[in-house]
Image 1 (spheres, rainbow, N blue to C red):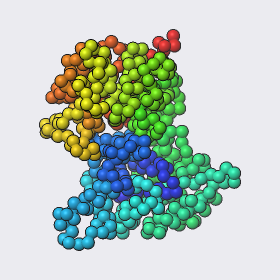
Image 2: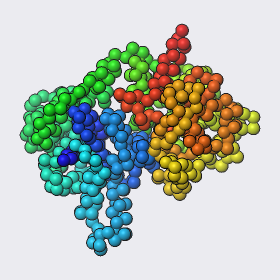
Image 3: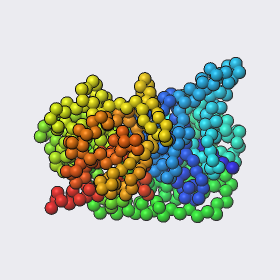
Image 4: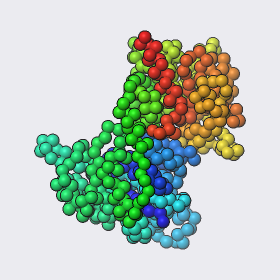
Length: 544
C-alpha cells in the first residue's frame, strides 16, 4: 500500500525542502523501494513558464513537455527518477480545473468553495497517476503561515484523516538560528512554526532543524518537549559543503530509520550508499581547475541557471577538475578591445538560453571572441541561435541578419516556426498566449557521422529536452553552411536545426536543446564532459 510523506517548511523560505525531499527519495530508492516525488506550489500561475527567472529561478522542463518548478530538477538529479507533468501542481492549475468542472456542471449546482472542492482537487492530484509506488513524497512550496498555502495544508490534514497515520507522515523543516552575540541557539522560531502547524490541525511526526553547526542535546530536548515530539524525531541538518552531502548526513542522523519506525516497517533491505560516498570522495580530491565564463542576462541570481551550474559541476567531478564559474552580464560586453579583454582569462565561454533582444549583442561579441581566439565555446538554445547569427553576418549582404524575436528584419535567420512534428503528429504553436507556446519536452535529433557532436554521443539518434519559441530558419540553411558552420544535428524531417559546430575551431558547439536538464552526479551529460575536457586542454596549452 502506497505511503505518503508530506514535507513542509517553516520560519523562513529557501531552507531547502527540495534538497531534503530529493535526499530522502534517494535514500528510499537506494533501499530498493519504488518512489515518486511531487511538488505542490501555492502560487496562482498555471506554471512557472512565464515567471522571470531572476525572481523564481529556472524553469525545469520534463520529458513530456511540462514547465515545472526547479525543485523537480533536484528530484531527477538525486534519484534518476524521471519527472512527469503530473508531478507538479500549482494553485493556478487547481482553480482552473475547479472552474472548468463548475462550468461543465460537474458539481450539480452546488456552491463551489475552497472546502471541499479545492481541497478535493488537491487530494486527487496527490493520489493521481500512481503505479504501485511504495512511497510518494510531496513537497509543499512556501512557508507555513502564508495565506496562499492554506488550502494545501487543509488538504493534507484531510488526507491524514482519510488514510490514517499508518499511510501518512508529516516532516516539517525549520531553522534553528545561532545568535553569536548571545553564543546560543534559539529554538523559539521552531516552536512558533510548529505551533502554526498545530493551529491548522497538523502535528508533525518528524522535525528537521536546519542549523549552521550542531546544537546541544539540551536544545534538542527543549524542541522535542515544546513541539510534542520524541527526542529521536528531532533531527539536525547541518550546513554542508555541497548539497550532495545531504543524503549521507540525513542517513547518519537516522532519518530513514525514523521513517521506517513511523510506518512500522521492519526493513531488511540493504541501504547501499557507495554511490554517494564515491561521489563525495571525488569531490574532495579534485586535482585540476578550469575557469568558465557564462555570458548571460540573468546573472543576479545563480538559481536562474541552476541545472547549468550543476551540469558543469557534475562533469568537473567526472574530469577530476574544479570548475570555477564567472557570471558575466552580456550588457557590459560592448564591441571594443577593453570590454572583451576580460574574456581572455577564461578557459571556455558558455552562452546559455535566454529571451529577448536586451543583452544579445554582448552575447554575440563574446561568441565572436571565442571563435577568433579558438577558446572552447558552448552555446545552448538562444546561445546557438546567436552563434549562427554571428557567423552569417560575416557574409557580404547578410551583415544585418537577425531574429524576428528582436523585431522586424529583412534577414530572419532565426524566426518562429508555427508547427513541428512530434511522435508523427503535427503540433501547432499557440501564437496568442506566452504560456505553453514553446516547443517543450524531449524531441529526436539525427546526428551527422564524422562530426564532433557524433564523437561525443557516439550514436546518430538522440532525444533531448527543448524549451524555445524560435528556430533556425530552414530557408537560410545554405547561407549558414556557407559561413563555415556544420549543421551536425537536424530534426528527423530535416527542417529544424538541432546542433551546429565550426570546422575551423577545435571545440565550438551550439545546441538548440538543453542538455543540462538531463545531467546527474552519477551520469554527467556527455556534452559537458567533452566541454570540460576541452577547457582542460586549452588551459594546458595556454599556460605552456
